[in-house]
Amino acid sequence: MSTSLSTPAAVCATRLQPACPKPPSATENGEELRQAFQSFVGQTLFGQMLKAMRKTVDKSAYFNGGRAEEIFQQQLDQVLAEKISDASADKFSGPMFELFTMKRR
Image (tube, rainbow, N blue to C red):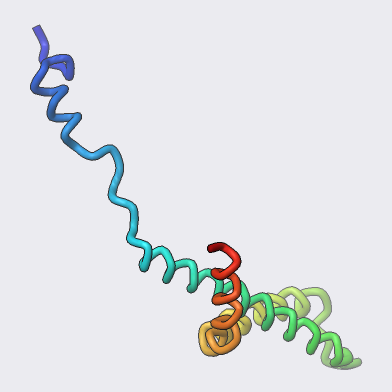
């Protein structure tokens, strides 16, 4: 006879273990939400700003890298938007986040 989970001791042992970990507290969840909101707002704003700035500059006749330059320039703009967002997005996303949370209550 093999031992399996059908024995009463094994069934009780599996029932005593929690099925899932405890949910995070409200402050941890609120801080994660604030960080995600700040990141989204900052990257969206700065990404659009950099995109608009690039449109105002004409391409050089002699030093144009073609399609490859456009692709890498978009990747550079994405990284720049992330860095600028990390550095200064909290200044304008803070009031926006407060309004966002007021609507959810």
